[in-house]
Length: 187
Image (cartoon, rainbow, N blue to C red; front, side, top):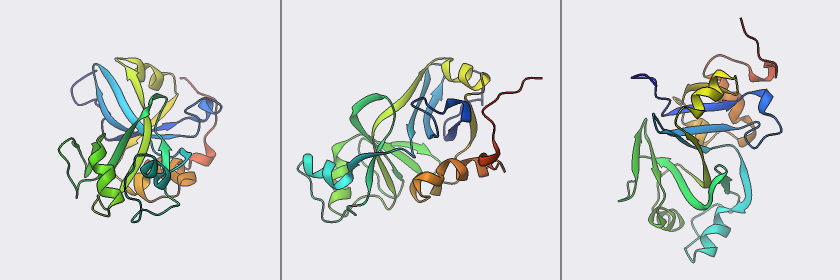
């Protein structure tokens, strides 16, 4: 990987050829990308578990949480661990400032704050994450598995309806993703 080539704070958009795989039809927010590998959170794959149910299972307050808010399936790694992407208006001891106005926290304190109505203005709670070993993501991109773009529109993470997040992320590049083919072309 060359200097300045990090895809941290980028979206990975699964190309149509990945349909049928775990990552088919997904958008992943990359939290880290360096020579050792990459880590991200899938932001458009709601699980069957609601945030109210999760907080209740953890014995936390739920009165300030919309019962319709799902917990996301954040990726196939560490599916028993929680990860919260959130706006940087609330900071916690364990928060990692990703830049770009977004934080990543994997501590109970942010969930307690959300349940009690003291949390960040915008958040996405996920179980699990997506991970790649050093060089693996770069190879997948070369193999046309992923389209990448800067995550300059955080509404894609926090507000856009889940089913539209792939289309909205691709629109950052001026691409109508509905017109994308599952076939890769090579010159």
